[in-house]
Length: 538
Ligand SMILES: [Zn+2]
Image (cartoon, rainbow, N blue to C red; front, side, top):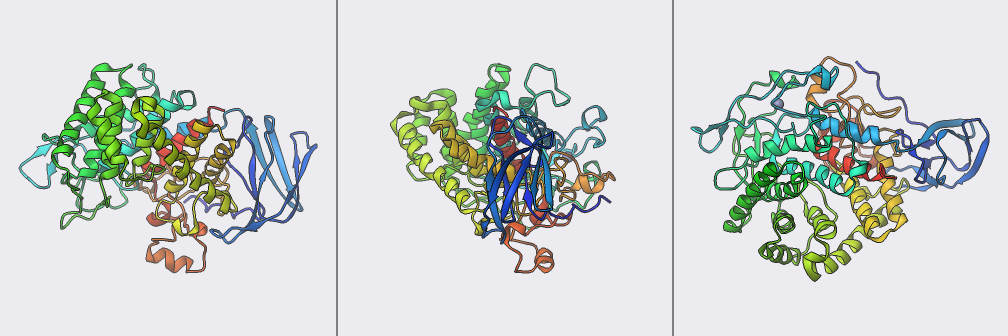
């Protein structure tokens, strides 16, 4: 067994992945008084006064200190007897961003992971048997491929579409910040590796479409597998019923992908766009919300949603951007006017992707409503993320009552919203507040924990992830981000262990059984790819 994570530092919380030479260095300090900063040669470079303030989410008293931009080198912080080292270098997070994309490679289903690409973390091809249609057991189809969704081996259309969209927009907005040469099986084929990895999911998404254009909600077994390797999970997989949310998200993602891949693979781009148009035709013919509920006897992930209006809005935006057909602009405008949270980039709430499409792809072409009005709406809503960050001692853009299952998602969504705001307005305060969310993920948090496996001095060691638990290798599969603290919906075992008094930002167990606080998921990796790709451009 891997040893438990070292105890939290009593004074300093830092980005354990280092800091960028071109960006301000923020640290969190839990002790009142002077903090000395020493350079590589041990010379005093500055003294900063830490004045901690109460942080409601963690119960800590914490001072968030801006050390300014620092030259490349090794640095040391001192406060009384406590000290902590950190490094500053150009583009320090390229490795982490690459690890997060490679983390998705390790989630690939339907193929063997070979040592030349996967290092120690190999396995034989998994889930290669034909799937059975749950509603018509006479139908058997080969639906291999895609990424295992999370700690389990299910594959879910909406979450997969959202994950690919994070990667595709990271590439569209920050091509220079995206990682490449990741030792994928496709590396060197002329496509950037971030697009190679996204394509693995897109190929699978295309297979999830039914003949009438709708998308199956998920491909999964009736029950979760035990903690075994994927190739040992031999139970029957089913194509579960279609849903309007899955169809809307897939439609949007495939339309977006058609623009991204067109310069590289025009015939693939055409396939993607045709699939998106068929999905839209189904959505238009089925205007009512068709939710998904697990059929009786099915206990795998449900990913139920309360509305499909945001998926339809996103799909209309992407189809207009891809076709220039006014019917899609009109549909997007009508759906936008219903009101959406444009700062959400998660599997349930996807209107933020529609906003990116309008603000950065269509721009003036979108017309007054989807350009100017939407922009004002977006700027106001993203301002709320900054306000939340300002209320937090650690600068974390999450109110104490929102430490939900997968709290890393709203935190990364907040970072995305503030990054987009900074791109539109040029505001450095937005950029720097977004940066604090990245610092949170890599250790500047109440737990002194890097939430990404294999990164930093104190990364999580026991994620809820079947291959990591079953492969016999001490260290977990690298490049996977944990959902993080969750006091809103903890397991009874977590509540029993932690009690009610532990504050939300510390409601976390780095233990394999704790899916409620320490599961990994593809759609938590992917917004972190977007965020780090942006900061790699500095
Ligand atoms: Zn598999």
